[in-house]
Image 1 (tube, rainbow over the protein chains, first blue to last red):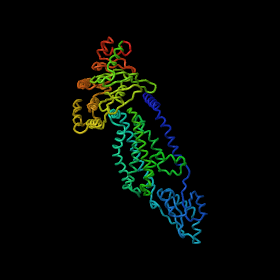
Image 2 (cartoon, rainbow over the protein chains, first blue to last red):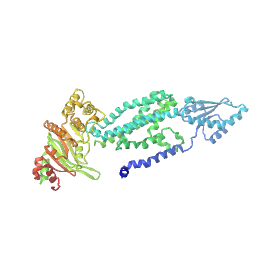
Image 3 (spheres, helix red, strand yellow):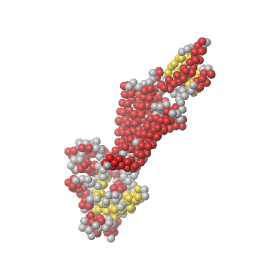
Image 4 (cartoon, rainbow over the protein chains, first blue to last red):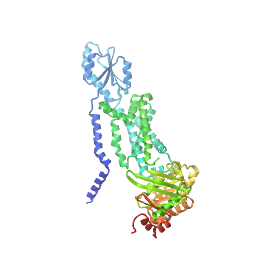
Length: 347
Length: 258
């Protein structure tokens, strides 16, 4: 009898809370669909630059699944390799045969190398008899010297993700509590300006996000030995901007939540899709039109910048687009936050 | 007849009266198609202790929020201390206490007061002096450094009142200040309110407790979003021929005598 009453009450509560029901049924479908697109898309084709390679090898490599881009000069190809446009350069130097791999994504480098070795093995051996080529492939890496582990490669993304995730949750819940306990109303009954509320929150949380960003970056690089080729200050700057976006987004979304429970519900809707698009998974395998979705995700820019800095030693000019994007997100969310405060006070 | 008596009082106070602390002119508020307040006309004098009396759901809180500037009327206008609302500056001269205590429970009483004092621009020695003064007033001086989470319900209510008094407001807006409070504490809060009134502070409070209404200088009766009568407690009783406010409320509110 009591069990029945309890069960009935829970069912009734659920029916009342439409958003929870929608989440319960639709969120798993959303996440599964995303996973389908991430893991089940087109196969990854390594981009190979070739210089002075016999034309017959081109078609062989293409048949094996590589995308061939002939270059006329080595420095030109190397510049594109550094920018991450290419997976590898295949070139000849005298009678030596060399492969230069991009290296910041170990799995991508590995598959490119494997493809080259398997496709051309017989040719290299055959040519050996005429002594046109040396038997040994000269392998070199643009980034990471071939020592990068999987953790080195997705570590930078995780560094950004955790800053983003925890600040988002914390800011969302803190602002929500301000609303539910009535302190926000009391705040708005004082002569405070709306922008002062928003910037006060930014400053207060800012202190802790700086500490958190520093700690996460320091720990993963120094204690866990995450591969680090760039400037620590840039990592810090990126992490901080990412936290700023998380903070402003968290407070903004909390105005649409009535309880802590509803803040948690934003995780599968806001956080999980961003993880898929952040670069943890190779997006080259995804449907091209779906790939474009990543441009709407703050975490994508943060992760892109962090990877660039830590794996490829990129400097400020290389990551400036990411920095601007994160700043633009923050400013947009700040403005929206100020607008949302109108719900609390009419002016 | 009774209604006319109420309206007469209102009219006499209107038209740019310099002694009016609050003037509401044909104030209407609707949420969607639901009208919560219907063309409220009301003038509250400076130094007056004014009670808004009505059952829950009658629109009292909505009216107080409109006066406090937290909500905007759908029609009509609100004048607060001579300034047309919305006006951010005038909020610094108003003290507001909502139904909920609205305190930060992790912080101590003192930290709460320091925070709200800063919002009203109080700092330094003046802030310290004001905090000491309001805490003495609500008899919480010895609990200044305790976290609010350790306060009892009554203590929180008193601290909340102290917060609204910090900046020495000219006008005090209190939404159900004594709800859920034991009789002894209620008595002490009323003593404080009356002494604040005697210092010249205008006080507007909402209540649904009839004997509290008796202590106000004037009462406005609210029912289903309409101000049905405004007069002194004596005046209301006289107009309705009732011996208690409760009876007067039933007669003037449009209900039938029990």
